[in-house]
Image 1 (cartoon, rainbow, N blue to C red):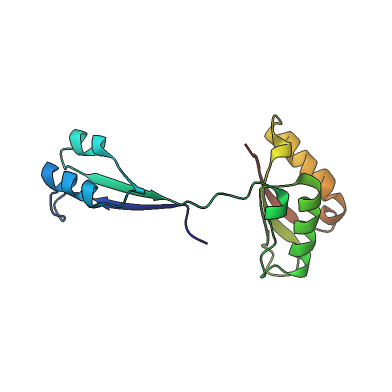
Image 2: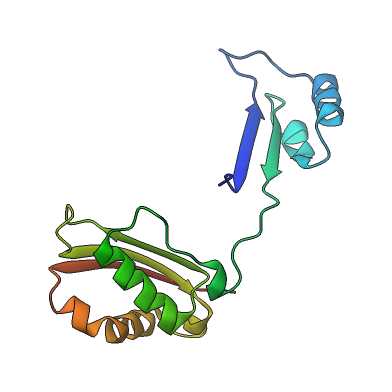
Length: 149
């Protein structure tokens, strides 16, 4: 999967070559159309810096059907993944067994539109209710939630 953001920075300092205003303008014209040039950095910085940022054209998943479990998930991770996917329709879901493989502690990242308008505590309570049977046998859980736009 391609990274969502790639940055290339040309800077001038003691160890680097100074980039003049003319070189910065030439560099920005030579850049492909999908790269963005920050001209304000060139004008405001005494070191005359040019920053290019390429943004991925890949859109993030927008529906639960787009969120698929990775191939490397263990049986326990897959069970938790499917249960959360079924109940919360997440746009992003990560499940990881952080107990060394014994299934006693999990790290979860869930981004779902069902969390919209809820406090973080209420979001976590929703997840705890969904995974109540599983959490009883766990030593701990690291839970990060986010409301999807």
